[in-house]
Image (cartoon, rainbow, N blue to C red; front, side, top):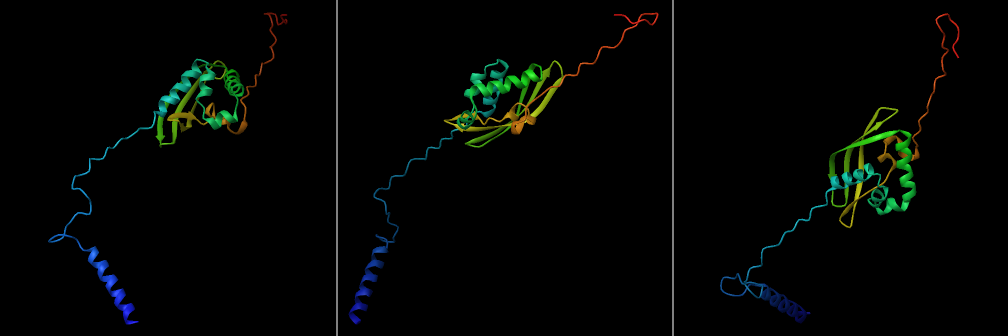
Length: 187
């Protein structure tokens, strides 16, 4: 038992001796060389410009280039809607509201490395209903360092969310009777 205590004491003493610093006054280096490390290289890679992606999307809309618009959708959005359905939804909405021109003003954006939200005001000038203006928020995802749009019908008009469709009901008034100066009906 005494020999086991003596052995433990010798092992602990050797371990403590190995932990002390070498040289007079200590301060020895644990590294092989005293050469300083180079300064760290800091690189900041900014996220792409989300507002530019939104502007390009609506420029393609103004040129009726639905293929370019569709290519700007996220992978998940393209899997959820075909090019034909995407084009039809835009065409149906624009034709129903009788849009003659479209103005878009891109507003504030919130950007993180993988997601972005960009607000915009869209103003449809229509032949039959006057101006239709809405403020909408577009959600984007970063795919391969490019912003891609998360498609939703509410990007056309917020009221189209959830599968709603745009419809215009025309009311043509009946023709009134026309009388001559003697009170007799004319044709």
